[in-house]
Image (cartoon, rainbow, N blue to C red; front, side):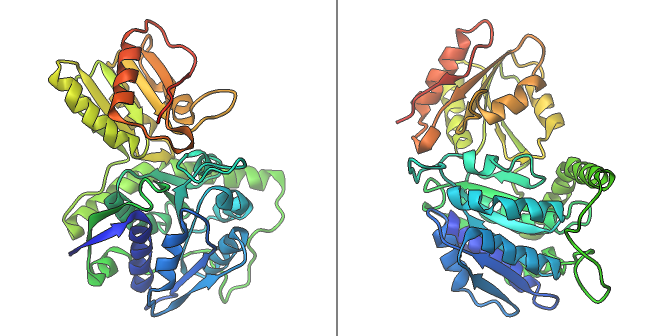
Length: 386
């Protein structure tokens, strides 16, 4: 194990490189890449790495980048790509194809606001376009978490109980271009952690098709199989995390990260880096005698409902902070989690950091003060960030 100073973009690319080399004795590695800010540095780093068996293919569009990954995974290779914002939107058709074909493609997404008007700053709306497409989605809060999650994503995607794409999200610039020290395992450790890629339905010597025309009953069966596999992801994920901790000496973040939440009367719920800021606010407010806790949802799809419901139990006030908006309803995390609270709890949505504005401790303290004054839940509130 070594310690390296890396941006989250480079951390994702290094994890993908180690995973690629780990498959060198089997069917190798395939990556399709096309640049878009703020994920471009991830691809540049990957293109400069030596991978013994495999190829990083520079293509003419994001749609083609995922097409290359579909071809690679259909042939049984380990696959990876990275994108952001409108690039992901252009890739959507092939992302859905990869999901429906149950191909284990790992994607790093540097979250960025969708345009036009053009905004290159962080907003989770790009990844959330695909929240119901049958793709596992993680939202990370640190560079170490990005590295660990990309590495575990290959193991998760390629598990025969899962066998579907996995998306690893990092907030654009907030993480993608910020450097931090991370622990990086040796290649031999990664080789031990990642078995050879085995795609059971790969195109090989026995003739068969992928993506053929289906009658309604076949589609119904396939969707239910996919849904059942998604529901099993949290349990599979926890098993992979335990093995990761044994091999690498530190435990990856759980699907849902609770912080001083056991006796909390007010709970601050979020995804991504806002969750780290929320933890600092919790510490400050605890010193003032306020029973406040934080909950960070790291695994968003499938939504770990049982874990969230257990964390919500007994909590009187729940402030859900969303760096995204489902237009016409409210924040996406709030809309998915509000029904998991105890009856009578105040579950209030706060839209903050939209378009990449800073979400600072003073903003979250203001939110805590606001929800403390509420007797019932209201419409989603826009809390302007700087």
